[in-house]
Length: 201
Ligand SMILES: [Zn+2]
Image (tube, rainbow, N blue to C red; front, side, top):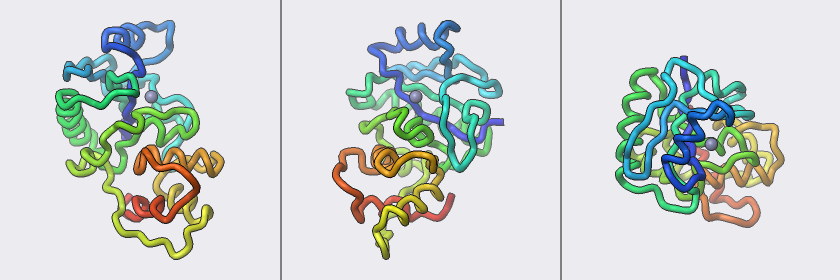
């Protein structure tokens, strides 16, 4: 029974090209859904069945994400904004799927969240704050003022949030920023702690 939803971008130039690859057994990749840039929705795998979209990684210590998740691919090269018609369909699909399987907003994650250093989709342009506002992704913290802005404290907060612990500091920071502060760079800063304040996971 799925308990997690993983969002991806296709990194391809068209939905047709992505559809072709996602339906070709030779590639050994599949997903439950693909949403075209124009909002066309394709279902390729039944929600009850396993798809091959997540690969190696973990969330809250659970591995084999493919066996416990629904994968949604968004037609996007990774270099373009996500168009409104596509996001509208994503909102509706998430609302329905989350209700069907009682999946909480904190269980809607990006591929990069569960596979830091290996995957960067749905990428820095994905509008996480929109999903958070609609309660379709976990709300970020707003005013956590770290007592001690050390990497050790950061790692504890990040691992409590669900991110995999088995990656180096730099890779983990990059993954967390991709989700919450996509255009930030430089060393660990107090601002990196703010979104991690939420305890409701
Ligand atoms: Zn992906």
